[in-house]
Image 1 (tube, rainbow, N blue to C red):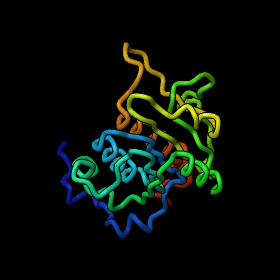
Image 2: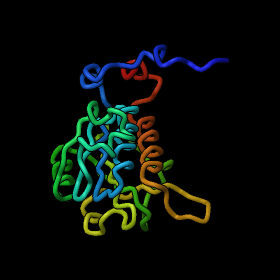
Image 3: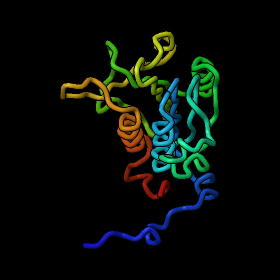
Length: 185
């Protein structure tokens, strides 16, 4: 066994990425403090063909050296837009027909593995502040909460880890099926 060289990976260019079919997923980052978390979400969003990222509130926007450290250029490939307030993002997504979920521990939350969606669904997921989570004020304006089960002594995951798990899972649920795998790849 040998590791595959970067030159053998056949990665697409930024221009090819921009015109490729994306999954109908928008990632919303609300009041994220860590620039490295923001960069990591960009990089994961690039890897799994996320349609767009909404940056809201105090969440920093590219270009920024600290975001770039973890994004490694994904801020150039993944479309993003800034909203001063999370409500503006949610209202925009509703007008476009998105089903909106917060990634949050809440009563009546849906476990990620139990979430049933169709490949045609338009989904948005909100990741909240590293300390306070998703704003309480927005919870009544969205369709529900998705929760990642955890079994250790800690009750939360770093946002970049959580986003990686959620985005990969939704990528599989939205488009990575045997019937349309060739369309994406």
